[in-house]
Length: 147
Image (tube, rainbow, N blue to C red; front, side, top):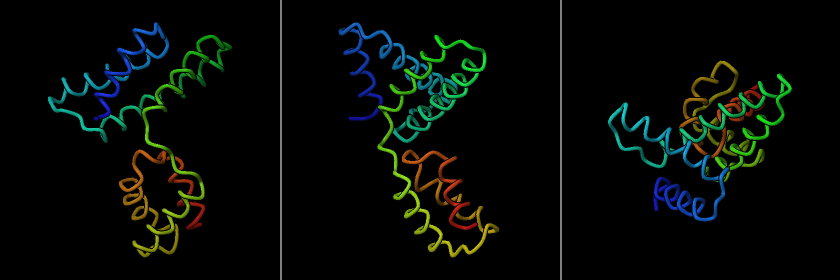
């Protein structure tokens, strides 16, 4: 079952159960998917949908920080709840130890030895670890290991 089908099924379940927050969050994801499909006239696969969900999480995290700075705790809570629902549809994220191990494997594969080789490592790591680790975490792990 594709991720889009899972979202469609979960949306129906949320509507039946009158789970407003879950329903609205899934609708937001579906809106992002439809926007890309219409604008670019292409059918998105699971990898594309995961990238969109990650983008949505990042946007909501930034919004939550801004709401916190503006002392709007009510809106901050809404954003944080949506983040939790969005994260439910992402693959299980790697732990820090697992991420370090994967980065070390990539470094040995590429033959990197210093921070000068970071670009090579990041290119391969971003592709290999897409969906299971955030780009910021990957970057920090590469710097830590190479530095």
